[in-house]
Length: 215
Image 1 (cartoon, rainbow, N blue to C red):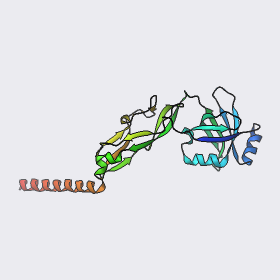
Image 2 (cartoon, rainbow, N blue to C red):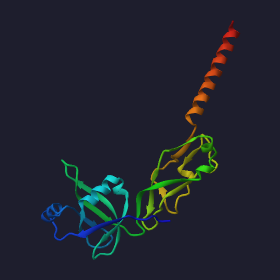
Image 3 (cartoon, helix red, strand yellow):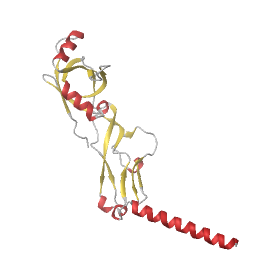
Image 4 (cartoon, rainbow, N blue to C red):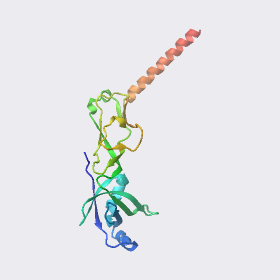
């Protein structure tokens, strides 16, 4: 199931060139351009505060947006470049590419874990360690999954969840070409300490027996 694509609001920028871009910045905006998709490039302005917050949220360059521009049809876009001030490191220009529904792109998809109460390892006090809370997939723009679901039913201490154990949406594939770990269930610290003490005791007992045999 396709997830909800966040809206990104912009306005059409009047004029082009450095002068228009400087005026845009003086007005508290970041100038940008939307290109591709078989139509003419569209110069836009995005409020600086809106763009800055999106950048701070992370994954901006791999997030699909529904761009809303007054007087224009909504269009799915992905950012392809953010130019920054070399001194202040603040955004000064941004480029977006229009996407068709059949376009394949790389996106980070969040991972959700279900049925924790049906995992014997967790019932015994084990700890769920999430190695990858999100996974980068190659997906089709028209069929982006909202999340990946990991069913923890039946998992015990020492069990590991890898990408091969997750059912991926049709047509989607990981960008990493190996069976990497998503999460695992590890023993609680108390149990690990007890196991270590037991191993140490067995080792000491074995050493004592060996010394006695030598005598």
